Length: 251
Image 1 (cartoon, helix red, strand yellow):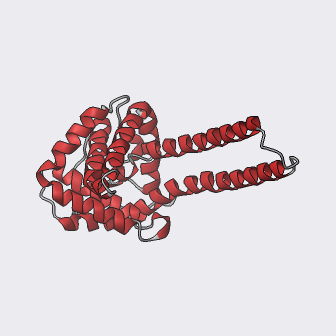
Image 2 (cartoon, rainbow, N blue to C red; image 1 turned 90 degrees about the vertical axis):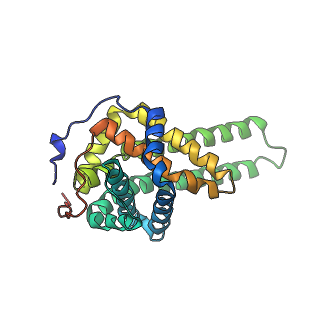
Image 3 (spheres, rainbow, N blue to C red; image 1 turned 120 degrees about the horizontal axis):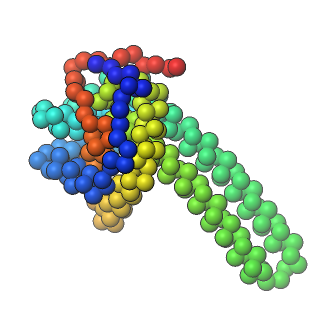
C-alpha cells in the first residue's frame, strides 16, 4: 500500500539517541550474526558499482529485514535482495543524495588546489628566505575553516537523507517523495538525529580501531538504531514484502 507523502504525519523532537541505540541492539540481538551478514554483504555489493547504483536496493533490503523483524515476521538472508523490488525508487533517492555531494566536493577540491598552488607561487616569489610564520599559520587556518565548512555541509546532507530508504520500504513512497519527507522530518528532529548519527559514527570508529574488522560487527547496530529513530518519528506501517512497490516516479 502506498501512502501520499503529504498526508504522512511525523513527530518533532522525537528522536532519543541513547534509546535508539538500545532499541536497535534489542531488535537484532536474537539474530545478531544474521544481521552482521546482511549489512556487511549489503554494503559490499552496494559499493561495487559507481554512483551508488546498487547501494539503494541494498539499503532497502537491510531496512526491510529490520522492519520485518520489528513486526515479528521471520527473516532470512535472502530478504536483503528483496531490496531490488525498490530498485527504481531507491536509485532516485541515492542519486538525489550523491549529486549534491558531488556538487560540493568537486568545486571544493578545485578551489583548494587553485588556492594551494597560488600559495606555493607566492611563497616561491618571496625571495628564497624563510617562510613567514604568520603567512603559514594564516594559510593552514584558512584550509582548516574551508574543509570544516565542507564537512558540515556533508553532515547536513547525511542527516536530512536519513529517513529516505526507510520511507521507501515502510510507506512505499516514490524516491522523490521519500527524500522530500525525509528532509522535512529530519529538519524537525535535526539536533537529536545528528546526535544519533554521531553516536553511531563513534561506534563505527571504535570498531575500526580493531584492525578495521570490528567496524563490520557494529554496522547492524547503527542501521537498527536508525530504524528505531524512524519508528520514533513516523511509527511503523505494515510491511508487506510480497507486494510490489508502485512504479518509480520521476516527477
